[in-house]
Length: 124
Image (cartoon, rainbow, N blue to C red; front, side):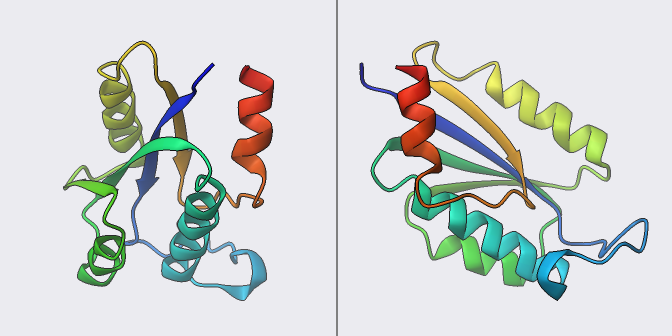
């Protein structure tokens, strides 16, 4: 069974923290987004995948970061809330081909190098 992932990675770097809670490892929000994305990207390297960034008014720095990845599509809008960006993510997921597996995640999910290997074994 050939598994193809359609990754919907949701990100917004405008607000550092609504609740003033510190991020893991002392990282700021922009650093957290980059580390989380890259951990997921590395974990996918032995898989078939498409990655779409569902951005909510992303900064130029973050847009430039995602441009470094030729196989990443950025869908950046001014959505203005977590609820609206989640709804956008769901709307996109409903249009993914039935044979693809949709993986929705946010900017603060860290992935081990073997995350998608294990996920693929579980699915198969």
